[in-house]
Image (cartoon, rainbow, N blue to C red; front, side, top):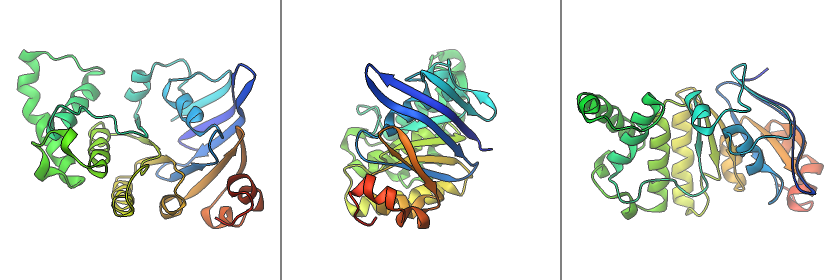
Length: 251
């Protein structure tokens, strides 16, 4: 039994079977990686967790409650927060403003500015946002416009926007895509520090250096089917994984 329990999830797009009887158990406080070749169904599965897609059949349980049928903002309120492949930030706002917006939204269930109430609460939210920016190493850049930041810093900003929402489960979809090796290693270190908070994480990633640096357990998808699930050391030597993911080459 895990904090996230997925049972017999199927998803078809016309004649394409994107997910085929997928089962998954994610343990609380762990880092669970989902890997596989392009088109394996990884992002489709993630979309079923956040309400962007509804499975045709199956169940998705988070903390003992079903996520199916909930809208994305309702799922967010349960503590499930997603990091996208391309950083989703407000490019024309400062870093501090970027982090304050989801802080208000998390508290209220939606971002609805009430000037009479929120002026009183702004100091509290600002302090929390500043604390998170310090945690990710961006406090000195708090007044910079987000569009001026490097890709690695934009990713750190997006992580700050997630952390300020007090996530229970953090879903990371290709968190190091397009990064230099230096930025990738910095992101790995940051995610390890975030792990000290006890946040459960699901990571979809093609970079095996990232996967094996972070994951406690790995599930491998191929053509919508989980073909293996094990600890990283055993996944490396699994011939089915090597064949499906790298054409027989060693991970």
